[in-house]
Amino acid sequence: QLQLQESGPGLVKPSETLSLTCTVSGASISSSSYYWGWIRQPPGKGLEWIGSIYYSGSTYCNPSLKSRVTISVDASKNQFSLRLSSVTAADTAVYYCARHRYGSRWSAFDYWGQGTLVTVSS
Amino acid sequence: DIVMTQSPDSLAVSLGERATINCKSSQSVLYNSNNENYLAWYQQKPGQPPKLLIYWASTRESGVPDRFSGSGSGTDFTLTISSLQAEDVAVYYCQQYYSTPPTFGGGTKVEIK
Image (cartoon, rainbow over all chains, first blue to last red; front, side):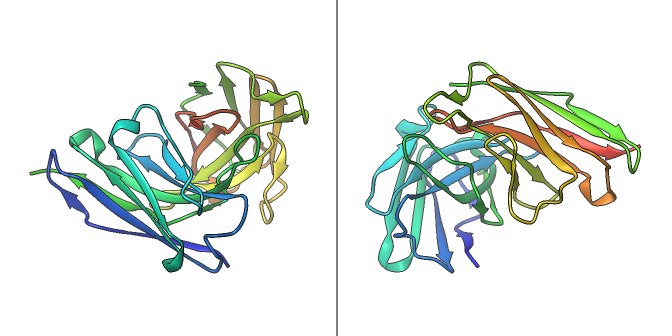
């Protein structure tokens, strides 16, 4: 059974960089056709896709966040990571990692991690 | 970006009754090459991640009860819960995956009347 687990600091200071890692178990992150993504949800609000990465390192990012987002993959550890720079209180959210596919177009997100709350505060 | 608009924001339905949620996309999510609508529905219960219910607008994910059904094409879609159960209390989101960035609707909260 595929499982995804987010990890990282729960508190980040304004202007600093948020860093999270998603560990995948039950399947190889190098499985063909699958992209591994980050989605966030501010408290009490809706869902926003941040970006996704293929095991080869190919990435797609939301243009609204692209200048601040770095997504990387470590296939040897079956992990992928998110870095979001210059954070503000507006970046406070539950951050989820999830799986989807990309062929000519995307697929739905079929597996999700439990999510981790990151609060931006001094 | 494709904007996804859900209605209503919330609804209260009696147990055993039908619940209907609407989702409208700002442009068509029907891909003519394969005649598929790139539209998914998710269920999110408090403190949990979203759970995929339906993809391709009308295909139920494995294990999803058949009281959940999706319909629609192009820009207008509907999620129907045919007979509401207590465990269906949740927020439901539609999502388009036709283009980058994938985008979600604002959510519809379903409660028991």
